[in-house]
Length: 167
Length: 385
Image 1 (cartoon, rainbow over the protein chains, first blue to last red):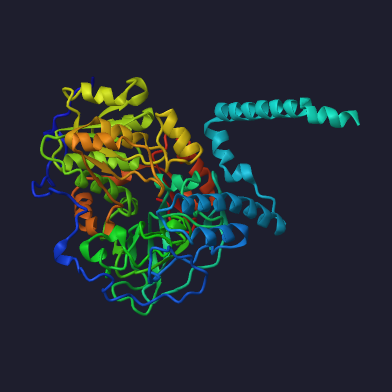
Image 2: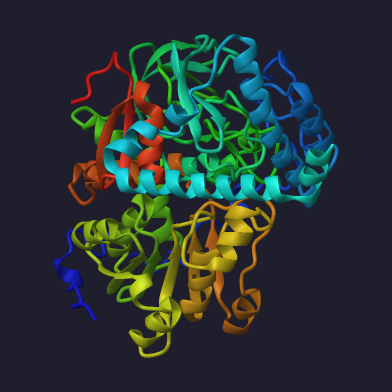
């Protein structure tokens, strides 16, 4: 067990101690609670210049939104379908996660279509791994190589492959 | 302009992207001077947050110089150097009016349960973030705060999230003088939560993690008693043992969905995604807090669900407090703490990296290499000193 620290030696000890901080933030502030629903003076609405998917739980679009990466392709189609379901449904989120994974493949395809082979090791920070964790990198390469070798051996010895070899 | 570009789990790079433009009369365009990688960015980087789209720019902790403002911006002008809170908040809605700036209802079309956050997937509004040379800042009159004269930029950038989130973790915990506070997680937010627990009068502060270099830092910086959960076998039993079997008055979850320490949570939460992240720290916090105690959560989890011992919450009469930090609300007090020397944010920064090397910075932070606690990205056009 480590030695206890004397609180009185800590810089700033107790300066924000406040017995009135109970219950604590975040609390509903009834004095500022309008109780009137969506009755506040709204900000100006940002013009809708890209496709914005809206939660079914919003009955009006919030005033501003991000314009990054509008939905597109197959992943976009899945996202549009996901947004037909409310936030309370697991399927809403699982469809979005599935769309994210498909979007990764679309991203690689997009790179290739633009004549660019993605530098995946570089994007994964291999330079810093070599600089700071060379033994770990060697271990990962060895394990990956071993797993691939086992898979290759299994595929080669499967009945389907031997049948194909006979013809 | 140069900007970070997400390509998939564990893959990021820098790209030339179009300059952001004013999209709304309350927008500002800000030239970024510092931009941190946050522990919660790692949830995005690890592919855990739904609707994280390829090509997005992350980054919700940044400072910058105002380049241009929209027609309705009154408080800022070109040339102002500002701290930009990670929350995007209108200042007018039902929630902003109550100081709940992390829960604005006018900033995120994609979800009602999440406010708008810079560079944090479309689940948080689809805004490009500050890991770039320039960024669009909506509601520029509400969130951004001018950096006080004489304040170090490295202190200022940590006031956008790390310091407020750590401080609010301690504030939400309702710490009373003499309380025993256990903080799960010795990342930047956990370290700051432990430091701030003393400001609220804690009598004992304990930090639990498994990364030795971070525990060493926390021991000195907070200061705190620190324990490696891998060396105590059962962290909940251990905490009970060192608190006369009662448990801690307060437990703070400063880890979120990337927690280590439980094979079940790791499998379900981070590998096959049937939990919204590995809720190991939250599980321990609920079990290690005393009856009637408070569990304060600032660790980030996904929107689906987690397996935690909710029966123990009922049987022990635990209060759970949680929220995204309301940065705007806290900034005046926190600026005062920094200026008075009670909090030294910049001591957390271990790595200053050119924006061009963003892939290495993410990997170093994610893999906890080279003693990394907090990496900061600096565009090459900006002085790094």
